[in-house]
Image (tube, rainbow, N blue to C red; front, side):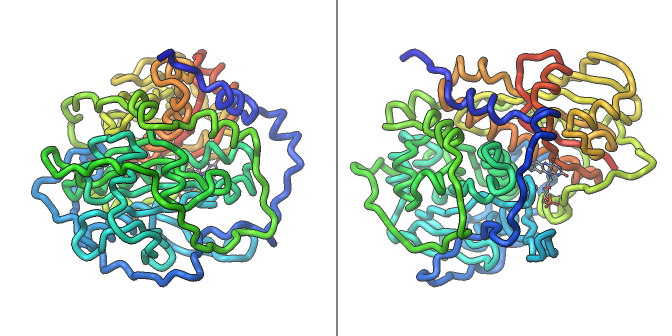
Length: 486
Ligand SMILES: Cc1cc2nc3c(=O)[nH]c(=O)nc-3n(C[C@H](O)[C@H](O)[C@H](O)COP(=O)(O)O)c2cc1C
């Protein structure tokens, strides 16, 4: 079958680019009186409190980021799932936001702290949680049962028989409610669904490795069937990705269901009075949808063989690092450097092997180095090693590229995560657009974890798309920016 480019998604991408002119022309105002509710609430379902999370694994964060499993097998029971859920996607702290209401900051970074993702848990064989499909409420650290009985055959069916899904006792599923982020970012908010999902997945993959559980990012599934399973309409809320946890070769694998699941229709509260759909984003989503197990199987790639891990750096436990993380709002005024060893180590770990169903990492890194001891300031390309493109002090340029935000030029280095969308489409077809965005989000999340493990700070940043492309003289598109420093 010929590989098709994601035409509508690429058009969407063009339409939602930021430029100095587009940012200056915007007249968009935020309606704080009707800001979308950041939590999905099922008023008719009783909460099932999660037990206390299992104790910290203290597995070094950089090793966990590269998915080097901790020694010793932990049982995947209710306490262990509580550790995964609360640390991957739970609440970290609360503060009063610009609209006057509380903002519940989560364990993962999220553009604008708008938290468009919802988290679901499909359980087959977990001590302490009966088989079923659950919604995770981060504000209560509780589950609500949406379906009883083993949901795995339906997931196996939706995921084209993917072995990681078929042999996992539990699977975490992320969805996106676009209006929560489109309220501020409008159509560009669709990109955020993937970036923010990637931030959660980076935590989840690393926490799973800490607990010695295999985990994989799965972006290929039959969209309609997954939405049906979750009980979401595919427009207001859509299934985005799966993360089967705890699969082992030789474990009993579930058969695929012979039919799609029956519809469920639990009432959930409206998230705001006014809401709007952005048709160009919905078109991009429809354009990148898969239907039927044959199409899903054609999408799937085997995970590449795992290369040797990079030399260890900054061995702080993964749980401690996630609790410590929080996007830096200012970098130290003396602009003190990070060491070259740290910089290289962070890049080597974050870009290392990724367990995913799209095969190889799709993201490359372009860097503007401001203050790394032992490295000339300037623009670099990173591909397993650092290659100087242009030498010179470029703080102002980096700040400009990051939508003229000071954070873009104040740190020790600014990292531009790039993906060649045409190349990705050439090998992966229409679904490649989603994978490219999600991959960038995971890499961004890994960069956060490695930086905080090394006692540095980091923040995600947005950018002027074509200005970044021109700066790096590349056909690859910028997907996300991470600035880091002290
Ligand atoms: C994809 C992404 C893009 C972001 N873009 C910006 C940005 O342009 N400017 C900024 O100041 N912070 C940005 N952030 C940081 C968020 O504002 C921050 O993650 C959010 O407020 C939650 O706070 P926390 O990271 O401290 O938990 C971004 C974060 C992510 C994940």
